[in-house]
Length: 368
Image (cartoon, rainbow, N blue to C red; front, side):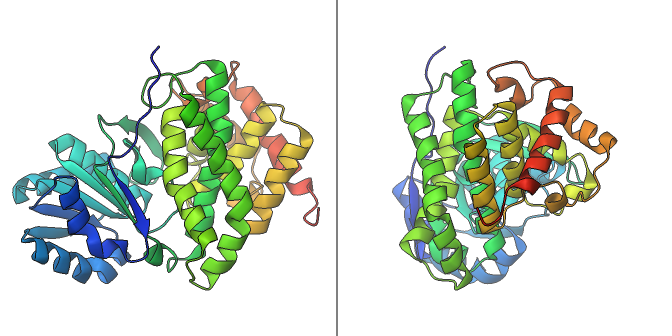
């Protein structure tokens, strides 16, 4: 198995970066017409900025509002609109699901893709992966496309004005990167692009975890005041670039599989992706038989920044045995990333690990 490392063609991050959308697209050889797929808040606040830049470049563009869920139907609709426009590129501007749908539409039409996250809530922006859900919000499948984005443009000023919860959720997603990557590498399993893990990917995954733990608390404090500080920029980079490169080129394991299992219960749909992944990381640490202090350190960090550490935190205050079994069965379906763990894991073991993570998460002293 060959070693494979994948990354976007160009990554740009900083305050005011969105004002350079057309200029940055031109730098990587892109041009109009352009279909911009935006989340509701992104369209409301950024449409004039996009229009000014596109006009200056002499490009025709159209703005399409994202439907709210990355479903197969939404992807097909976006692809149809791109074809009707004669687009040469699709820009996704919004949260992870918006980016995933726009990315999938670009792949379906053979067009260039530009990723403009307006929140740092997931590691979706840099990858070639789309996560497809049902209309009800349950996980359905991964779609792995042939190429990463041509451009990732991250405006720190926009991200810091979003609700802080999104930045925190992104840290939950990023925190899993090292634990999942090291498990997949130890098992000799292929990464998300079908190749062996590189030393670079593991180093990035570890740096991602270390950055989150080192700068996360200070970044949350600054973000509450909507200030872009070095710590905020470090966390944006960790959530977006480091986690994106790390998960894709090192691999996923139990944490994201548990996330997918949690989506099978409607009560968890109010929790963000990274919030569910954070709890999944605790479950993975139980399955890994991680040292007690490592588990406790992750719990203490999660509690400090506001990430879930129990099922109650995820909307399941009285999870039944049937609920936990549903999560575990979904997490261990054939083809799930939990099968990248260094040893085979059964649904019964996952159910036991969920209970243990929930109990241990509740039991770690908040003041420790």
